[in-house]
Amino acid sequence: MTGEVLEPHVVYEDSRVVLTFRVGPHSDGGTCPSNKRVRYDVTLAEPLGDRALIDGQCMATGEAGSTSHCLPDAVRWKP
Image (tube, rainbow, N blue to C red):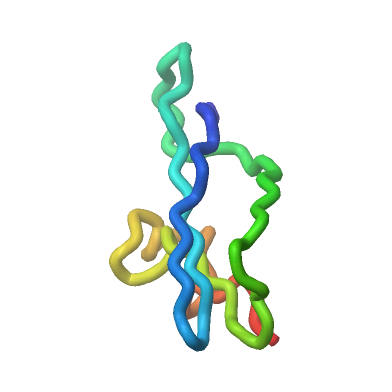
């Protein structure tokens, strides 16, 4: 069950932009170990340019880092 998708934490670096999303608890509780995919549009404060877009939850320090939902190096897009 998916709760509310919270505003992402964004870190701007020279070679990448890291977006880290969190999801609040579902109002009805639930015991599902995963969330359904939902669309979330993000307006960046800086142009992405030639930087990679990184999923912060999939980084080695992220909560999802070792799951099958993550791509190698947490990269979701790169120029």
